Image 1 (cartoon, rainbow, N blue to C red):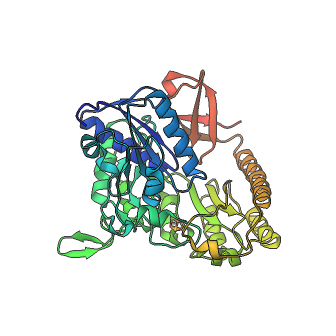
Image 2: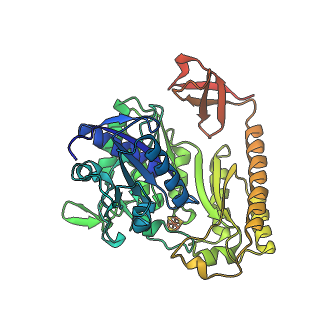
Image 3: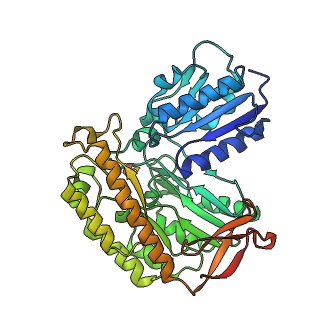
Length: 431
Ligand code: SF4
């Protein structure tokens, strides 16, 4: 295809996907493509999919149908986690021209050039075991806050999760490259960087997952070294750690964040269940006692620190009693908010063999119960800080006359728009 000139993107799923779409878009713009909004007409539409999203298949079909109605002559490219996991299923969706797996998603421009509108979709996907290499990505939607991908893939085998099958083994950027990216972002005016990965605490295995060659030696770098190095880079005011497994959140990381002016007092730590029995069935690598210990250390060093928690409800074998264990455990913890996920079956995962299955209605009820708990935790956390003056970074975005920003410890502030505050850190008295 020689004539394609405009491209539009749609992203499903996590911040990592958004960071990757943003980088793919910049790569394509460097190759001469002009970017369009997804709602506008474009010669090429790229959908970056997710395997965690429920109804990934349905969402994908709906988006393709919408494109077909609007621009039947345009090319439709599907990439991302779902494209890696189910390439054939996606290729059968009427209107799809190209399906690109994990190894090819950064080469869309080349593939497009070789494409012609035909009856069947072309699939470019290899076995996930063969996917190596690390593609630097960061989102640049607005200048205020950027999600910078420093790690990809996962070597864990949680029994509910398809991510290792979709993204491959754990690998990371080199600290030296991360620093270069951070300096570049600082020059572009970015104030806050959120370090992002699939299993961020496992940072350091190098771009091929096999260690980093430094001089004559090959060794792994690690997350603690990364944050120590980034803390010294000039020009960035704030860092956040997007999410880190409790067993990888070491004392030294917590102590370092407590003593840093740049790493914000905010952690997001997946728990998934507050029952050791369920954690075992999930193949998580810690018990709830370790989790409680992490929270306790954080709060003893940083009493104002925000702690967000991921939790899954309705995992097979989660009886009413075991769910109550989770509820009581979360209730007792000094945490700030929850992200609650309803368990849903995923093909080729070990959890499919676990019984008894929890009825969907019960899963939804448990979800609601924990969402209520999250609301109460957030209210309590916010109330604890009333009257304090904290630093708020306001976003460069006028939403119907309002603007939003976050305190250092992740309390959201909304106020009438003032241009001089956009992308700036302001002392703010919490009322
Ligand atoms: S740590 Fe577990 S849940 Fe997270 S990506 Fe790896 S396998 Fe999935």
